Amino acid sequence: MDSGSKVLITGATGQVAFPVAIALAVEHQVTAIARFRDTAKREALEARGVECVEVDLAKADFAKVSTDFDYVANFAVLKSGKWDLDVNLYAESISLLMEHTRSAKAFLHCSSTGVYQPAGAHELKESDPLGDNHRAMMPTYSISKIAAEVMVRYSARRFSIPTTIARLNVPYGDEGGWPAFHLAMMRAGQPIPVHADRPNLFNPIHHDDIARMVPALLDSASLPTTIVNWGGDETVSLEEWCELLASEAGCVPTFIETDSTIGGVRVDLTRMHELVGHTKIDWREGMRRLVASHPA
Ligand SMILES: NC(=O)c1ccc[n+]([C@@H]2O[C@H](COP(=O)([O-])OP(=O)(O)OC[C@H]3O[C@@H](n4cnc5c(N)ncnc54)[C@H](OP(=O)(O)O)[C@@H]3O)[C@@H](O)[C@H]2O)c1
Image: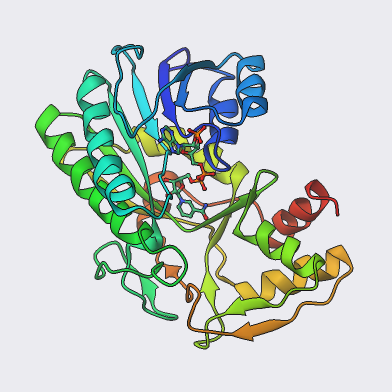
């Protein structure tokens, strides 16, 4: 990415894209689109020079959005639990956004390792079977992310936009994430649900690594679309990170086995390493920083 590029980012009020937008704004002209329900986040973005334009993706009206971006990074996600909204309108709106910004040099779509068929401790490659590993907790999520991937691939070809689909594992950091929910539950004395197929292995990735890798993911965009897993180099169990978080926060973790939660999702990162390199934040350091940034 050349410095001073015009970048459009969606979902910039969310826990993953907020630090990405702030990092990109250091060198680039960044525009964020969202509904901006969290006005403090909007003010924080604007204070860093990010232009904020209100758009509801459910309506897919991009009339107020410029068309001349160099790069577009889509981090928005709809998690209402309503099928038509989360699956159909989400996938359609991303495709319409790609059409609107079709002159971009590259498009990055943040997907999820939630698109894979549950596979326990198997290291999932990008070619492994797709499925619905989030059904127990978020019924629409996996299907919505699969539908969006298909629309993004179609739109990349239809509008000749070099594109990367990056399947993110477990993001976490100062802005929160699943481990931050676990921390809050443990502080409240609640047991952490874990799938019975233990240990529940994941590749958590710190927000700093995510933000650092976005330019290289955009530079890896291609036609047909590049598809790459996106996670931390270290495989860590949910049980391990909860134990570390609890010990840092001075509380005691308890676990309850249930099928009503997401089982481990562990990914093969060979392609990520080839395209954008390795993550840098050691998971123990990252989790300690999460506790420090989330006081009781
Ligand atoms: N969180 C995870 O553990 C995880 C794991 C793997 C992959 N991912 C992926 O990472 C990306 C970011 O996720 P996240 O956790 O940061 O999400 P998040 O915190 O829930 O944020 C969602 C973002 O989407 C925007 N959004 C929601 N509905 C919208 C609408 N109707 N119109 C316009 N914008 C809308 C929200 O902005 P407004 O509410 O202001 O409109 C917000 O900026 C997503 O693609 C997600 O699938 C997340």
